[in-house]
Amino acid sequence: MTAPDTHDAYLATLPPDQRAALEALRVQIAAAAPGAREVISYGVPAFRAGPGKGKVLVGYAAMTAHLGFYVFEGDLLARFADRLQDFSISKGTVRFTPAHPLPEPLVHEIVAARLAEIAAEPQ
Image (cartoon, rainbow, N blue to C red; front, side):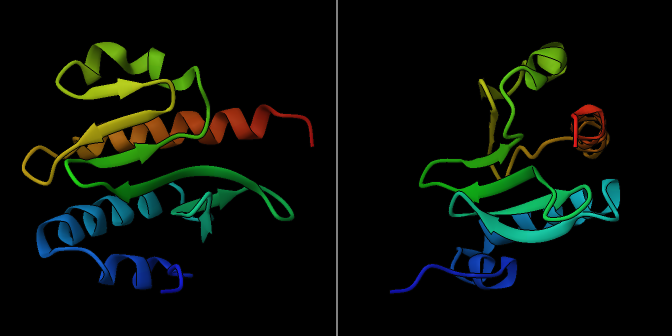
């Protein structure tokens, strides 16, 4: 079986509850980063932002017991730790479930913070 090469192909492989939750997250990310391009990066659906090829902004994926929101940067989530208390987090990952998704305003703030980091990096 070949790995999905688009967001739509990836989402089509998922059970309905996971697909719906990740489709909602996809829409939220796209709204928070309107110039970002959809890609598959590190084997997961992701978004790239910035000039040229761009930097990986954020991504998402489904696992057996949870869904993941990835920021591809180790220190960013620490800034939101107080608002992520109800979720399992690690260095660059927030784990959530279809029944308990990330709040949309928080997704927008995390994406905005990641965009600011990318903009501040030397080109």
